[in-house]
Structures are given as C-alpha cells and as structure tokens.
Amino acid sequence: MQSIIIGTRGSDLALAQANEVRDRLIAAHSNNPNLSLDIKIEVISTMGDRVTDRPLSEIGGKGLFTQEIEKRLSDGRIDIAVHSSKDMPTVLPDGLELSCFLPREAPEDAFVSHHATSIDDLPQGAVVGSSSLRRKALLLRVRPDLNVVEFRGNVQTRLRKLDEGVAEATLLAAAGLNRLGLSHVIASKFSVADFPPAPGQGAICIESRIGDKKIAALLAPINDAITMIVLKTERAFLRQLDGSCRTPLAGHAVLNGDQVAFHGMILSLDGQKWFEDHAISSIADSEQMAISVADKLRARAGPEFFEDWITA
Image (tube, rainbow, N blue to C red):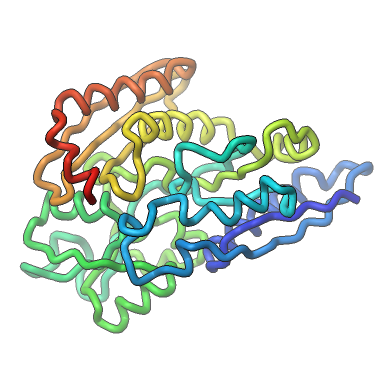
C-alpha cells in the first residue's frame, strides 16, 4: 500500500481537478498487482481564496493561489499539488517542479450572460464582470464602450453575481465550466485567434518535489506529452515577460505534427494598444521560439508601453 496525499484549493473546480488526478492515478496503476494506492485529498486554504474583495493585482498576483500549498509540499506534509496551470507563477520555490500535465481541455474563454449570446449583442455601456486584466483588455480592445467591473470569486460565486444582476455578462474558462458540468451556461466561446487565452488555460498541472523518484514513477503514466510541450512553450513566453496577474498578456501554443505553432500578444490595460506575433518552430526549439516572440513584442512596444504594467 502506497499512501499519497494530494494538496489542492477547496473550490468545487479545484476539487474536481484533484479528483480527476486521483482517478487517473488509480486507473493507470490498477493492473499492477504489486501496488495498491491509498490516495487522500487535502484541502488547503490560500490567500487568493480568502481575500476576494480586491483585485489580485493589488494583493500579490498569482502566487497567492499556491504559496500555502507549496509550503506543505516542500516540507512533506503533502506528496503532490494539483493546480490550474494558468494560476502558476513562472518561478517556483526551490526544490519544486511542474512534473506532470493532464490532457488539455478547451483553452477558450466562454461568454456567459442571461441577456446576450455574444459580446456583440451587449448594449452600449453594458457592465461585464471579470477579475482578469487579460480578459478586460481583450474586451475593451473590441468594445471600448463596455464597463468592465471587478468580479472575484470561484465559478459559482461569479455565476451567482450574474444572477443577482451585478453584471450583464462575465467571462470564464470554458474548461472549468466543462469540468464542473456547467457547459450549458456557455452562451458562446471566443475564438483563440481573436481572443487568445492565458498561458496554461485549460490544463491541469501537478507540482512535486524534484528528485522524488517514487512520485515521478507514479505520475509518468498519466502525463500528457503534448500538453507538456505546449505548456512549456507558453510558460517560456510568460516567464520572459515576467507575466503575472498584473500584466495583460496572452499566449497559446498548438502542436502540429513535429512543429509547435505559437501566438503571443501583449496589451495595454485599456485594450487600445496591442502587439501580437505568430511563430512556428520544432519541438526542441519551441521554448526559445516563445522567448524570441516575447522579445520581439517587447521591442516593438517600446519601454513606455510597460509603464502601466509596473503600476497596475
């Protein structure tokens, strides 16, 4: 019997993701007569979950969803941590790594509204709720008349705010809604070409201790090689631009045969300035390709473009 403790946040979506990891691990090793898994899920409260009355950009960014979990992983109180890949900072604590990715779900953003089927159907000046600077900038890029208000909280909280009339529409990750059995609330999906997702959106990742051979052997059968390739590409772009919840940027990689196609974009906070680029490379060169795209966009935008990123 091998006991495994999975650490996760406590939202319904986070628990659904942790349960998926548990189920995949059990299925992957079910035919091994020499191994019996006892997998427990431990809910860990994070600062990002506790503080919901302010934008993440004001209280510390993405790390607020991972710090408490990573502390328990580092000191051995849990064996693996399950995260939404888009929530992961580019710099991890010493001794930890993203060692496994499940097959990516839909990367698109979903448009959710009781009154409209798409952003084009919203009336002039409509209120849209979103806590993402990327989504806000992309919305204002095509509809500068919209009033985008802060919309923190888990999926159910945001849907409840919509029911209460706090906003006429909101944007959520299609993958999260699918995993929660809530795909029926999606009025429409945005094209990844016109409305590129956050790096890592739609993918579940597993964080573990570097050098933990037992855990590495357990995770190997459930790791999706394609997702790992494209996620490493997207995270390289994010890392090169020092991306966080303070920065409106988007990056999406797709594996086509033995080549990786990448689309990167950076935007001003008001969505009125943006720079994007597309590139293709071999799998081996995909991370460097994404870094080159980031450098190209930074050079095209100029240093003044990033001033509001720093103060946001």
